[in-house]
Every structure is written in structure tokens, then in C-alpha cells.
Length: 214
Image 1 (cartoon, rainbow, N blue to C red):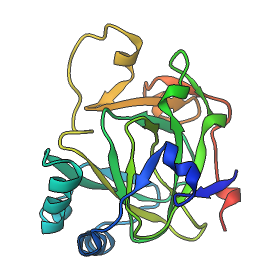
Image 2 (cartoon, rainbow, N blue to C red):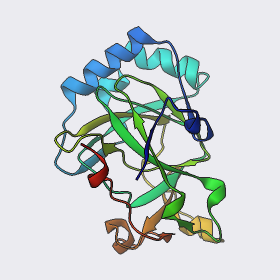
Image 3 (cartoon, rainbow, N blue to C red):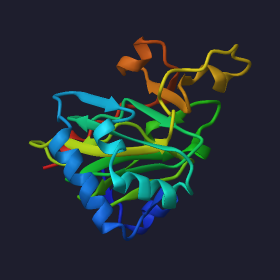
């Protein structure tokens, strides 16, 4: 699979690089690197107190999300597979202390609540580069950039995202795809999430980039 860079023009369809905030990024990156684990699998924490309490988190909230309440968590571990694609009704902020790879697609490429894995593109995100991943971008857990390394990635989202699930009676197909607050999910049939009841909405192969990284 071809792996683009987030600095390549192709990424502008999926998100943007956020310039500046060097001091704030450094404070967050040090906390992420020193106070969060790198598990063998993939682990996600929606809101981490060590990150949430940083002065840098307040500043980024006030500027990037216009003062709207924001949560700072992380997704860390080891992963080379697509497995699923999710979307939110909001942008997501990502960056990390080491390189990582995002597998992404466009929400408008969904047809009849399904999307082919051939629509997915891979982007290498260099260490320290802050991204806004647009609400129209399908994404999921990051991938490691090297066979012998894991990843630690900040996940910044509107407060309450991925925390619990609202209870209501589904009235359409999209409603059945809601897996958590502000999180709609399409799973590949081979993914664990599919066996847990997630909507099987990814057709084609379950992408694995293990042969494309060094």
C-alpha cells in the first residue's frame, strides 16, 4: 500500500496541519510520552486527567475549538490493520511524540452504508505534527510507523465523545451504527468489533500495512 505523508497535498482532502503552538505541543507531548503506556494491542482512553489538567490543554481548547468544552485522551499501542472506520460530527485533533500512520477515507464515499477498503489511503504523520482530522474523514485506531515501534497519539475531541452511549430507539440505519456518544462505526467482517455487533460496512480486504513499513 502506498503511504503518503500528512505534508503531501493529498492530505488536504482529509484534514490540515495546525501550525504554531510549539510550547503547548511540547508540554502535551512530554506528558503523553512519559505518563501513558504503549500496550501490545491498542488501548483508547477518552479523557486522561494528566492531559486534561495541563494549561496547554486549556489554551488549545480556547483557540482550536473556539472555547467549546474539549476532552484530551489518547490512543496508544501496536497496530497495523484497518479493522474499522468511524466518524464524528466534529473534527478530531491528533499528534504524537513519534511517527504514526493514519488510515483514512471520505465519508461521502460511503454508499448504502458501506465502503470498499480500496477507498482507504494511508498517511504518515511525523512526530510532533499536529493535525485537524475533519469530521468528513473516516478514521480509526492509528498504526505504527515501524515494525519495531508502537505509537502514542493524542486524541482531542468535544467533551463527552466516546463516553457512554445515548439510549434511544433507532429509526434509521445510521442510528444502528452509533456505538458511543458522537461515534458512528463501520467494521470489517474480520474485525473483533463485527463479532461484538458493530455494523459490517467495510467491504474488500481488511488492510494490513505490516508489509509496507520498515
